Amino acid sequence: MARRSFQQLFSNTKPETIDLVSSVMHRFSEDIASEFYDAMLESKESEVYLKHALVERNLSVSFARWAATLFCVVTDFDSEKLEQGHKKIGQIHARIGIPMRLVDYGMQVVKDFCFRVFLEHTKEQEKVPGAIIYINNLLDTALSTINESYLEVTISNERNSQLLRLKMASADLNVECERVRSDLLVWSRDILSHILSGSKDSYIEISNISQTNFGLWFNHKAVFYFSDCDEFSKIQNLLVELNTICQNYKMLTSGCDDADFIDFLRVFNSTVNEISWLLSQIIEKNTRENQSKDPLTNLLSRRYLDGILKREVEISIKQAQKFAVLLIDLDNFKGINDSYGHSAGDMVLRDVAALIQQCTRATDFNIRYGGEEILIVLTNISELQVRNRAEHIRETIASHAFVDGASRQISVTTSIGVAIHDGHPDYQRTIDIADEKLYAAKRGGKNKVEL
Ligand SMILES: Nc1nc2c(ncn2[C@@H]2O[C@H](COP(=O)(O)OP(=O)(O)OP(=O)(O)O)[C@@H](O)[C@H]2O)c(=O)[nH]1
Image (cartoon, rainbow, N blue to C red; front, side, top):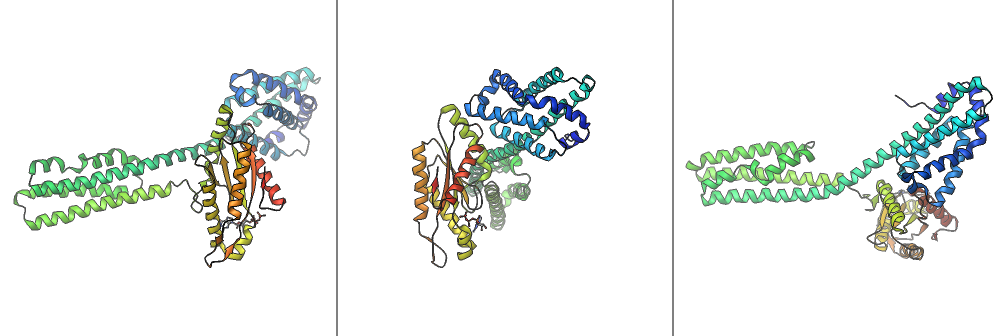
C-alpha cells in the first residue's frame, strides 16, 4: 500500500483541526526537542550517534525547527517542501547509519509527549479526538516518509557494496578459472601421452572429463557463476562431445590405425582448445563487467564513495584518526575542450588522474567525482600534511607539460577545496565544506588550494 503523503493528510483533515493543533503545539517545539534528546541520550544504542557535542548542538536546534515547521501549517503550506525535507532526513540517517528502530523509538517518544502537551493545553475538549488523530497521523506520515527514503538509500548503498564484494570475488574467480583452464590442458596432455604409451587401463580411468578437476568444477561451481552466459552452454555441449570422442576412441583402440588416431587427435585437440578459448572469453567478460574503475581516468568510480567515507568516519570516531577530503576541479576546462578538442580534454583528464595517483599514497582513495572533478580521501593525516599534500598536487599539475596530439602545449591548472573531517558522523558535511572551499578557490582566482 502506498504511503500517505502530507498533501493527502492536509486535504483530508478539517482546517480547524489543523489550526487548533498548530495554535497549541507551536509553543512547544523546543520542549519536544529536549524531551526527544533526554530520552535518546538515556539509550545506550543512540549514544554513539548523539554524544558528539557538535551533533547535539546542531541537532537540537534543527529538531526544534523541524517540530515548529511540522505543526505550524498555514493555509498555503507547501506540503511538497515538507515531503522533501523528510526525505532528506531519511537520507542523512542512512548516511550516518542510524538504525531504523532508533528513529521509530524516537518518534514514539515525540508522539507521547505531543499527546500529553496537547491534552494539557487545549480548552476545546470536544475537538480533542479529531486533533489527537491528526497529531498521530502527522507524526506517522513524517516517520514513514523518513523511513521510505532511508530504505531507498540503504538498499542502493547495499547494492553497491554487494557489487564491491562481488568485484573482489571476481578477481578470485578469474584466478580460479585460469587454474581450472590449466587443469584442462594438463588433462588433455595426459590423455595423449597415455594413448601414445599404449596404456589402455589408465586411459579408461582418466578419459572421463566429468571426473577431472575441470569437469567437477564446471558442474559444481561454474553453474552458479556463469550459467546465464552463452559460453557456459557452449562449453556444456562441448564437454558432452568430448566425452563421446574419448569413448569412441576407447572402443576403437583394439583395431585403431594411424588415420583413426590422427582423426581423433584433430577432433580432440580442437574441442579442448575451443573449451579453453570459451573459458578465457568468460574470464574477459567477467573482468569487463566488474570494473570498479572509471574507464577514462582509471580512478575509482564514484559509487564507492559512500562505503569508503562511512568506513573512514567509523575509523576516525573509534581510533581518533583524522581523514581529509580534497575536491579537485580543473580550471577553465571548457576552454581546453574548445581550443584543443574533446579528445585532448580526455587526455588531460587521464594525465591529471595519473599525476594524482603519483602524488598520493597507497592508503588514499582517488575517485572520479564528476566530469572534471576528482575527489581524494586522504586517510590518517594531520592538518599540516593535508595542506602540503594538496599544494604538492596543485604544483605538480600546474608545472606538468601537457601536450596534445598535434604537439601543442596545454597549460592546465586546478583549484582544490580541502576539508578535514571534524568528527561529525555524517560525512556529507565534510564533502560540503570541501565544496565550499573549492568555490572559494575558484572565486579567489583559481590555481589555488583553500583549506
Ligand atoms: N573532454 C572532456 N570534457 C569533459 C568531461 N567531463 C566534463 N567535461 C567538460 O568539462 C567542462 C566543464 O566546464 P565548466 O563547468 O564550465 O567549468 P570550467 O570551464 O572548468 O570553468 P571553471 O570550473 O570555472 O574553472 C564542460 O565543458 C564539460 O563538457 C570529460 O570526461 N571529457
